[in-house]
Structures are given as C-alpha cells and as structure tokens.
Length: 352
Image 1 (cartoon, rainbow, N blue to C red):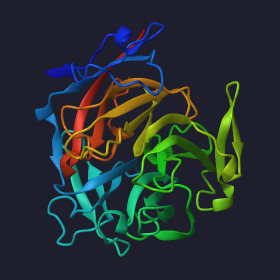
Image 2: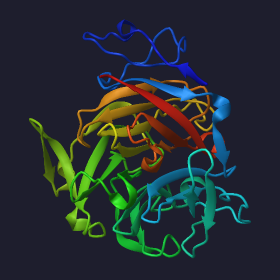
Image 3: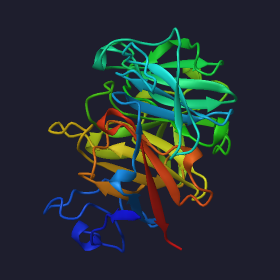
C-alpha cells in the first residue's frame, strides 16, 4: 500500500498564486522557503512504505547511473566493497552494472585496473555516468585527490578499462550528466548536457548550479564545451568562455550534489537535489528537493521538497530512466541512504 503523502497548504508557504507543494507534516513550525515555485504539472509525489525499500551493496555509496545499449544500468560505487559477493578491497571508485527491474535487480561488480583508492576527499569518485553511441562516459570528482575538480573518463568495453582526459574542470567539483533513454535515445538534440554546483569543491555548499553542453561527438574535447549564460526570452544563450557562465538554478547555500534525468512519459526533466546541512549526516537523516522543467535551462519548479525525509536520503540520488513507466507517473529513486544501493518507488500525480 502506498503511504506517506506529503502535503502542506500552499498558503502556509506564502504562495501568492495557486500552487501545491509537499512537505512532511509537522516537521517545523516554519516550513523552509522553496528555491523555485511549485510545479503546475506534478501536483503530488507519493512514496511507497519505508519497508518496501530494496537495499543492496551494504557499506557503499555514490551510485551515478546510466542506461546502456545492452539494456543494463551501469554505475559506480565509492568508499565500499560493492555488490554481493563483495570484493575484498575497499575502493573509492569501483564499477558495477545492475540487471533486472527495480524490485528484483541484481548488482554485478566489474573489476578494472582503473579502480581508485583513498577514503573521503582523498580518493577519486564518480559523480556522473552516461552512455552515448555505446561509449560510457564518467565524470570523476576529487580530481586532485583533495576534494576538488572534475575529470572525464570514457570506456568502450563496458567499464573494464578507461581512458582519462588530460584536462580537468578546476572550477567545478561535482559534475553530473543529464540522462535520457538507453544509449542516449530520445535526447533533446545533438548535445550532451551537464550540471554542476558553481564551486570547485565536491563537499562545500554553493549558491548556484551551472549548466554546460558539448556536442555528443566532442565530449572528450575541452575546448568544445559551452556554458549557459542566461535566457533571452525563452532562448538560452551560450558562451565558450567559462568566466561568462550564469546560473541555471539558484538556492543560496543550498546547492551541492544532484542527479538529473529525462522523464519521457511526462516530457519533463526531473532533478534530485540533496539539501546540505552541516548538522546532519545525510546517510541517516536529512532532506532533498525534486524539481521539474521542460528543458534543461528551465523554468524549474518544485515537485517535492522535504527538510527531513522519513529515512536518510544519503549523499546522492537520481531517477534512472530505465525504471520509469511509459506514462512517466511511476518512477524509482536510487539513493545512497545508510550507505546502500537503495531503491524506493514513487507515484506522481499529474495535473490534467
């Protein structure tokens, strides 16, 4: 049975126009201020019961995901030993694939000479995964082995071996691809898109998210990247000058790690964003927002927001496109709460 419908009167949120938003009841006498207005499309998100959560890979976290051409999900894990049977070495960056459905999946570790070592900020960890034209691409954070910078790697043999870029984004600390369908099917155009907090650190909160794009045939070429500057009406403006970058989403002090994917059934991008709180260990407690938009440059609106979920959301989360229903109203969140590969079903109520 579906449970815990998060709802709060729009009036309590100070809405000046008709809107709905969903928060855990009685979390606080002063509900948090939403970074963007309430969604007019997704009017409710209902999560399955806590005891329905499927967990695997105890002690491992991160889990960026992409839907590959072979039908499986490819992912990575950090600071752990992967799926069962677990490997005997703790890795900061290990590789795996996930077969099956969201409630009966099987995780399979992939051994590679490109595995990385080191705990916390001292070890490289993945922050984004994407398959395009049967090539796996991976954004790796902690590029300097000290919590800063992003580096690109790519694999043509299903994550067994990787080629590493000779360049890094020193301005950005947590780069994440926007995922579409299997092998990048159903993509918006010929570009690959990336979002990142506007900060060189993967650990410190920022004020804004940056949107970047590159032609899908030039992903490995640093000089081909363009940065979103602003909207001219509804038209996004781009620049190859990184210093000209603008903000695609602003939440002062509340921008950190995220995962973003395209819901083809609803024709909406869904963006999971964790809420940083220095007083909480997000593995075991904390909150997040889910935002929707018709394009990567917006306009973004709030589909769900909670300062305190009923379980720990973990450091990362995303909605894999493989596990979305055809109508887009049934989705599954993969999150790293309690240091697991954790999966929870969500049902979206959509305005007519």
